[in-house]
Length: 111
Image (tube, rainbow, N blue to C red; front, side, top):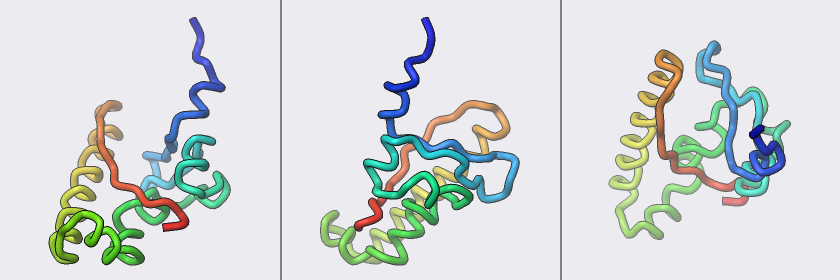
């Protein structure tokens, strides 16, 4: 049985280049575009963290995330940094071992 390409496109994912520092995005699925509000062309060449990850949250929306989570801004920033560190470790593992898993905190383009 082959891969159902249409069903795969409905999932939210990006493919990154592990041969380039920062792991720039080379492809964003339609599901990713719908979920986060970024077009594939907006994502191309940018790192996930700059598009939807913890860096964009820390720079643009920390207060809102802290309020929703019930944490102080300092605790929220600390938690996001821990998650970012975990994601970085898992991405490095995936690049070396060709396998890995990670949960990422993301933010839509609209906030």
